Length: 281
Image 1 (cartoon, one colour):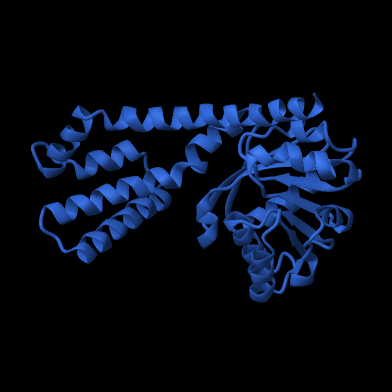
Image 2 (image 1 turned 180 degrees about the vertical axis):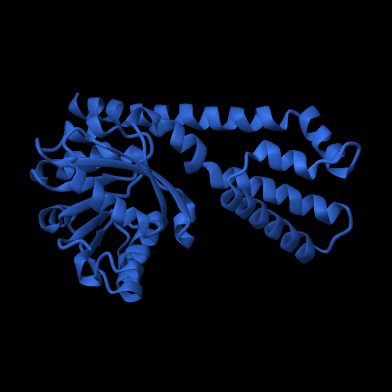
């Protein structure tokens, strides 16, 4: 359990999921959590009503009173946020950045030496406690800081530590990954309806199929190719369906999507630096 305050600069869906997860897991108490955002006071009031957390109109105040400060804003807003409050961070504080593509060095250059920066990439499954989250340490982050951050993030799913140079790949794979899965599910439901199933039946069968396949992979530890082959009888229905997917370039399209998302994460990481330069000019 954290002994100090945890502040959130940004109050979107990911921030709310992390707040809810930490409270449910007993990592923090409501009075330890302080939330601020750019201008949506109604959103802050709603979080206060539902979770009992404190809210603040001043982002600087959040930095002043919190042991851990979570940057839960969009990547394009990081430069402006740090220009506003970066000078208020103190050595020994932890900055947990959830902003896709933003390097720990970018943040470290805008806060005092000794501020411990940790970068994390959760995904939207944190809303149901099943996030695949990767974390990496900045140059000043201690093992204790990493332990605290991991405890926070573990309240909404599984946490994996990776080198920072792999974080853009994480963003492309698991950060954006839920959208790929939802897209596949959309198509499967539509296909089920096209072959005569009622919409609710097509949805139920698709979701249970997805759940069962994921659990099989997780519990058996088997190679997905082996499991696929077990389902695929020569000349059978699955083989016929897979042949269509191969001819359509399904696997390569998915690989290309992840590669492009990874590239976009790198591009987003360069944008705040450009914005900061423009501000300096």
